[in-house]
Image (cartoon, rainbow, N blue to C red; front, side, top):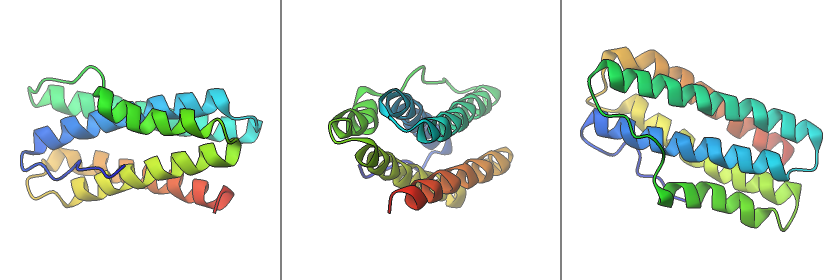
Length: 148
């Protein structure tokens, strides 16, 4: 999937899109954990799912603090693209599931990089976005290390 998160001119709208992407990422990690056979992989992906759940909380809190509506759950399209890859990959085994997750992490890395460079970024969002990008890079690097 190619993400457009972070291309929105309005920073609040970009945050809402990022939140929806995070919902999809957390759901995809949940689907992957349920389908992986390797217990070490399941444990690591459960940890990454927790990072995405924390991102959801942090983005939601920032939107609320700035008096913006908080999307309750990601759009069906984003969820299908992120979780659907994992479900299809399940037919091929652990390595294919990990490849699907790496593809999802490429999108989340791109989104956080754009958010970090966003021209209209709120100053109070800086630390949260930096932490999120650091997490996303960690996820992607681990997925690349076990499945190149």
